[in-house]
Length: 222
Image (tube, rainbow, N blue to C red; front, side, top):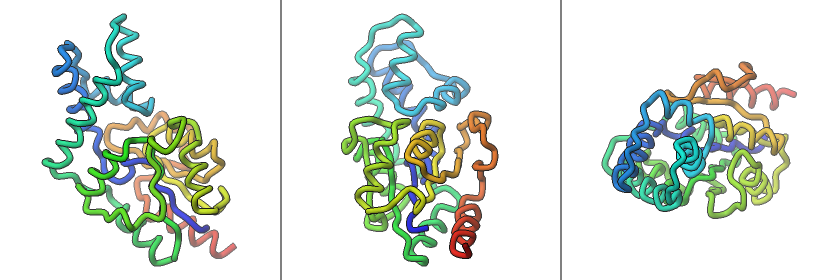
C-alpha cells in the first residue's frame, strides 16, 4: 500500500446541510418556488453533482431553468457559508492524514467538485493543501464521477497502480468511480447519506481510521 485517496470534500467534512441550505437560497434568488426538504435531499444525494440534481428536479417538474446559472449561484452561497459557519473535520480523518505522513504514504484529494469549493473546505477545516501530494478537481477532468477519470488522473500523476491505493468515499457515485478505477474503497457516509445505497456492507465504515489502519497492517504483513 502506497497511498490513501480521499474521494470528496464530504469525506473531510459533513457539509450536506450547508449544501441543502445553499441550494434553497439559490432557488429563491432565481425566483423559483423550489424548497428541497432534508428527506428529499437525502434521496438526491444518491446522485453526485449539483447540476445533475437541478436538471433532474427541473425535468420532473417540467420546468426549463438555467441550470448552470443556478448552480453557480449555489456554489457562491455555499462558499460564503463555509467562510462564516463553523465546519468540523469528520471523525478519524485527521488521524488518517497523520497516518499517511507517519507511514510515508502518498495522500490525494480526488474530487469532482470545484477548485473553489476545495479551497474553502480546506480553509474551514484548517487543513493545509500542502499535506496532499495531489489534489484533483472538476476543472482537471472531462467526466465527473461516477466515471473514473479523476481517480485515473490521480494514479497517473503519482505513478501508482490501483492495488497501491485505498480510497475513501462518502457517496455512491464516488464509490462507483473508485471501483471503476479498480481501487479498494471504503464507504464512509455522512449524516444525510443513506447507508442502504451501499449494497456491499463489508466496505461500510463509521470508524475510518480503524478501517484504514487494519487494511494497512494486513498489507504490510502480507
